[in-house]
Length: 479
Image (cartoon, rainbow, N blue to C red; front, side, top):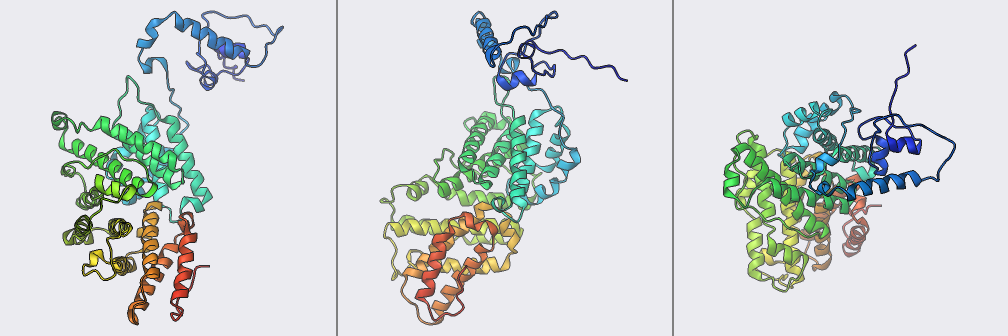
């Protein structure tokens, strides 16, 4: 029979008569926020007298406060010297984490090319000794599941629970920035991946909070204000930090236009420096995505989210021409379908938003000689979008998650308004209009998560379309 292991309890646990794990900062004291101290000699126990629940905790806190009042130097101690974060080794087997690397490399990394699989592999190997490594390993799994499952997390309780669990584990191991720690690129992407997961879980305020934290970290890691600071970095690291900056910039712009949140980042003067270690198609696709969101400048945000009285015909034409760039479309057509889907739908979404800005300021006309200023302009976009979506596999669209559905919803909502309010067009033109909108409706409604995007108003508009075009028997409404 093995002898019983002797363990020594800390002073607060002895006084409270609770189980102590004997660590330098035990679990019980950490939980209630008490100083964890150990007596130099044995203390006699007595159960003759008891005290009210909570009394010991209050006394320990008062004693700690009294000691601190006589220790002015406490304010000068570094943060890491006063708080310890013991490493727990209760992680799944590393093989569990490594199973997600292929999906991450294929679906997540091309759109967020900052932390490659080789680096994640190294972080997984360090999980038992490094809290930052453990935190990132868990959030990398969460964001991979969030972006690669065909059924949105709102409609799959098991998937939702898995993502929430991994996000929680990541947050448990996250080390706050303090006097002895500095943020890095891993921390930037850790917060950004957390934001993406919270948006997928429809916790938008939490998502915005972590987006702002990622932005704060990127300010501290990329010395954009100092040419000397940038020059001191090697090309690969400088390019990676620039890509991390643009990742935050893109997510901030989308969040502003979709959820009406404020922005603080500006487009950098140039694209990220060329990084030879980055796959050519990933670098090209990411630069094209940057180009699309740099289109959303400060003036565009002001018009989209605020006062539109200053919008002019010249500004609308300039913006629509920028978005109708033949070279951009040619480059996109040479990319993998996964990247094409995101880029093309984002481009159509931006064109739709620009048209809405013009419409609200009565700059459009059904008799305009310029198609860019025509009330029927979204119908041209609907035809183009139908052709594209007919050619690209459906899962290449769904893999981008709720963000792509938000964009498609906005496009469909605008096109139905145009179909409803324009006068009847003769013959085949009317049929084609309605067929385009029917196709777009069926495509969007085929995604299980669409019901989270306010579909009632859109369904009502489809019913109005049926009333307006009773002769088109093919119209079938979503039940």
